[in-house]
Length: 286
Image (cartoon, rainbow, N blue to C red; front, side, top):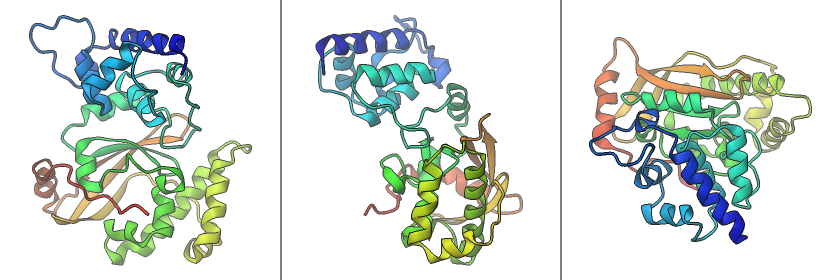
């Protein structure tokens, strides 16, 4: 990576850090703040990096940041789509294709996610690729941040990896399968005719899963909007929740948040998530 680009990358990070107030990203202002924006340690915390590593980036030194780290920094600093692409350019990394795990999340949607501190919430794409989760969503659903390629889509894992179905009671699997297929057909229809991502995923699933192929032949179509679900947590057991959706303007992303179902003990169980923490309950990698 050229030294001039690395120096510019550091300067760009400093400039974006300086314009954000702690309250913009859900952090307390605190006493004796000496900088107008975020501190280096706060950006590092938000991006999941060490303070030493982030400090080296701002100084124009250190190693070339990975695509995953660039995506995390773009979200931490609430970059616009153009700013995010520029950051990838400075890091000599290819800009992720829309719908991938490195997709840009609109700052406004990130702001809403930041403010949902007492309920599990996450942002996913229309192909069910998880882009960002709050800590309670990780505690409830597992950490999806390390998934790449076709496996990044929960729909793809649902039809190709039996372990993915542990999240739902077996009695609900058939209904979930049908809902996932109808939602995928609606998402594919909404995309531009030149888009190949959804088509590639559908072709892959048609060849890999007889169940998917049979359901796809039924031609059911319908976005998943507000939904009532039963989820199986490895420690807390069955939790019944309302799954609420807020769609982006183009329909490519949705903010999901989970509230306890009325008439159940789910409120108490969700309250225990913060106590249990973000233990490793993610699906095993392959």
